[in-house]
Structures are given as structure tokens and as C-alpha cells.
Amino acid sequence: MSVPERLAERLRQETPLLRQAFPNATLDCEALVVILHDHLLPAGWSHDHTDVLFAIPLNYPAGQPDNICARPDLTLAGEMTPGNSQGIQQHAGGPWLQFSYHIDPNDWHPHADPVKGSNLADYLVGALTRFQEAS
Image (cartoon, rainbow, N blue to C red; front, side, top):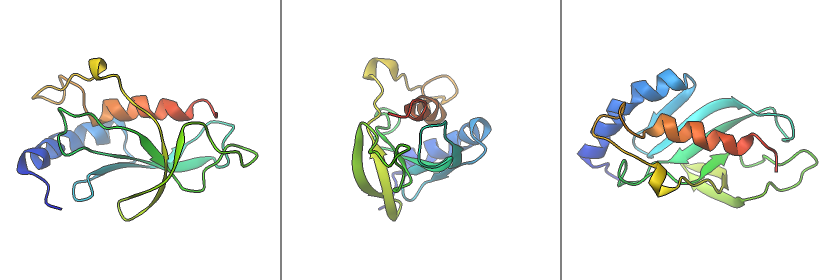
């Protein structure tokens, strides 16, 4: 898949913002995903850490990211399936457990300058709240 030049330029602009907010994050411009490596999970999960992934839509930043993924073997403590999990999805050449996480479109405010509007780091901040309560 070839990434449109406008999107590729936007991702180049956002990479430093993302890395400043999340030093362990990488932005894969070919696969159109952000991966946060080795994210510390709160108590109640089957693992202490997980990689976290979300996909970047082709119409980004007008279209906001949707859903968040974690390691495919992540469960709640006691091997229970987390609520709002959507099963295993394929992203960036591998399996990921996808969780429902959505931003209200009224809360997404992109701007030509990523510093002045909604951006990938903002999305990740919100999406990580999905792991705050193991349920």
C-alpha cells in the first residue's frame, strides 16, 4: 500500500510530538500504525506489560483513529476475557487483541498544525485509559 503524500507528511510532522509524549512509541508509516512498546499495565491483567497498537486511518487527521490493540494473549487476571474485546485482528503483520475504544467525533479537533489540534499523541493518551480498569 502506498501512503498518500499528504498523510505521509502529516505523520512526519507528528512523529516528534508522539515521541516526546511517549518515548517508547514508534510510528510505522508503511503499516499505518502506532505501537507503544512495553506499556505498564495496572493490576488486574494477566501481564504486567503489553505492547499497544492502533491503526491510523487513510483519511487522518480528518478521520480519527478507532480502537486499540494489545498483545494477543492478554486476559484479565484469572484468564477471563476483557469486556469490549473484539477478538484477534491482524495489524502490521501480526496478531493483536483489539479492544473497542472510540472518541466522540465532537471531541476530535484536527488542525493543520498538529500542535494546535487533535493528534496521535492525544489519541493514545485517551486510548490508554481503556487499560486503567481491568474489566
